[in-house]
Amino acid sequence: MKSLFLLCLLGPICFAQENRKPNVVIIFIDDMGYGDIGPFGSDHPTPHLDRMAKEGMKLTDFYVSSTACTPSRSALLTGCYADRVGMGKSVVFPADKRGLNPKEITIAEILKKAGYTTGCFGKWHLGDQPRFMPLAQGFDEYEGIPYSNDMWVRGNPKRKFPPLPWIKGNRPVAHIPDQDNQALITDAVTDAAVEFINRNKDKPFFCYVPHSAVHSPHMVTPSRLTQAKDNVMEALVGEIDASTGRILNALRKHGIDRDTFVLFTNDNGGAGKTSSGPLRGHKFGPKYEGHMRVSTLAWWPGKIPAETVSSEIMATIDVLPTVAKLAGQPVPKDRIIDGHDVSKILLGQTEAQSPHETLYYEKDGVRQGKWKLVRYKVKADRFVELYDLEKDLGERNDLASKHPEIVKELQTALDTHIARIDASIRPAGLVKNPKALLANSKGVPTLVEYRKK
Image (cartoon, rainbow, N blue to C red):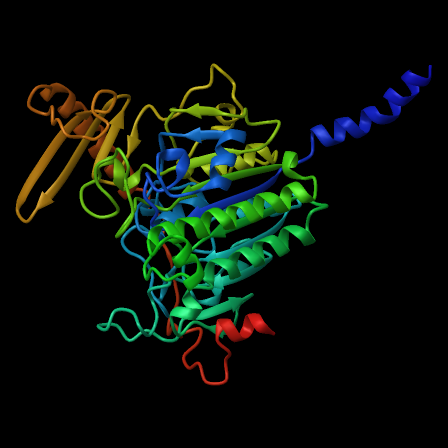
């Protein structure tokens, strides 16, 4: 009877814990290559990411849905191709009139309806006017930089950028004028994210951490550079690894690691000093695998099977419907959402398969199973290439001339996809007379000074 009483008493508690809505953490790196972290073959020391891979799932065939900072972030947060939501043409700049339309529904807005507290910490880059910023897009809190860390007074001399601000909420509270301040961005982002987790440990939360690293300018603290033996990319990757470790350790410390789904991924292929590992290509140029396939880890102790690897095709547009499913929320029905729920794959259901019979590389490539078509222009010349990714992951052996029927089929699929997108574009948000968030840094502390307060 005593055992039965305890079972009755504890049963509802156990049941409630089992059905608790999971916290969600998305860590989104900037410009990192497929081969830049240990789980994907790098020599860069990444002990925290190595442990994350051992405790979770490595996704070998995970793709961004759009390349470049702004399009990629819009696709992640809306579950839509960037072209569909009017954000695919280019990145947005300081005091740009364009931004993510507030009428779009973001992951944060879906989770707020489920009772989540939502926070964004890092590089936003979806418009720096107040109606486009995180607090207008479903986030309760925001701290970070509103666009890329190279959009500053020492950036492109052809552009007269205003001071690069550090924002809290919608207000500039500091600015980033030099290398010493640039080198603090990742730590400041991580501090804000960990502090948010600490405050919200007892209720469901969504913590979105879009880093500016490893995007240029490549600036790190002298101690990290020395530790990396003057290899600045190793230092930056180590910085990201340490940041991820701090976030995961905060979850462990509060005993909520088994209640939290964490996704670690990247916004596009690597650039500059990064490595694409076995893949061909990088951030710029034709849509080879190194352009859009990104190193990705999924972690949820007790839910996502440890030490597993999935080669099922998944993409950033799938994150919104997947997170909605995990939180018990419906996907918007009043608009086209391009992504699919891939939770069964992540949770290790053996029969689960990719919902993507066809994967599109923006408007310049398409994959069906093992076959990958790339097309591009060089001046007036057009090129079409075909690869067997099962036998030729590095895309070195063009098979287009040997399989014209497959080329025709894939070109037709790609052209049909482009026509459908173009016929259903939803407009980006626009404002008149946009103003810089921080036109003048006089009287505003630097990030170094602000962090000493």
